Length: 96
Image (cartoon, rainbow, N blue to C red; front, side, top):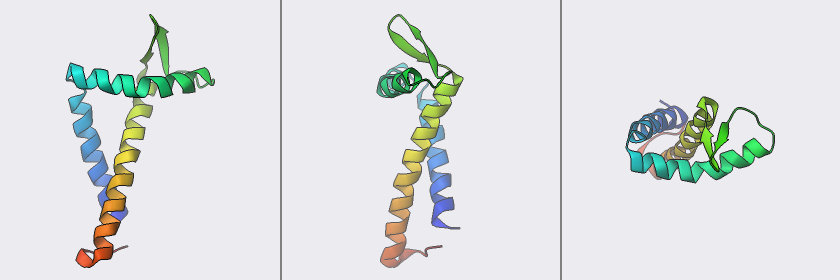
């Protein structure tokens, strides 16, 4: 299996675990705070459907949560891909 495929699988598994952790109120609140301002900025730039403003906060819609999950997956993919390439370059695997 190539390093990209392995990194994609690892990223999907970790993103799924993160999604389950979103059921914990504290983790959900921290994630919302971290991603709220960038989402709000994108919404203000004219990208519709990312969320709605409620009492001074941006409440993400399904599209907003999907964008957040995509960003989280991409971050984990990049992290795992770099780590797997470095490990393969060190001689403990093969690069495809």
